[in-house]
Length: 171
Picture 1: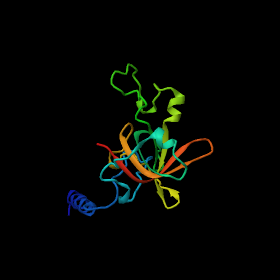
Picture 2: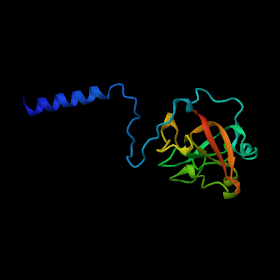
Picture 3: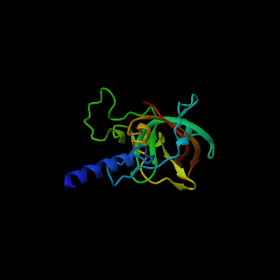
Picture 4: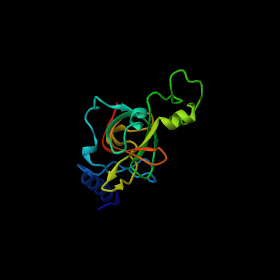
């Protein structure tokens, strides 16, 4: 059998083995592995009573919340991202005159207003943060509008974190 024939059979066999695989697609960047998340995390539709990030930050610690915002930052090694209140202006807004390389950092916004309008979203696997990035999961990316359902936790510095039980990524 020729080397070309052996290679052709090997390529076909490998392709057949990959058909129907349940594993996530390979990450675009091997340094940013994709998180494997439970199917129950994906919401089929946005909850109708979602609050703004600013409103959720005013809620009591431990409250179950539904919050809407835009994805700001995404952690490369954990299923964690921040969301910004929809009232905040990113540098990608229509009419913005700045040529900003990373408009999702909201560098055009007042820092105090930005601090009051962001929250962290964590996806957990048991008690631990899920490993791997959540970027690209169901289309989640910078500046995408999302609705997150989960439990609000606040620390003594006023930082707000939502432990997500469901996420809807708006298309």
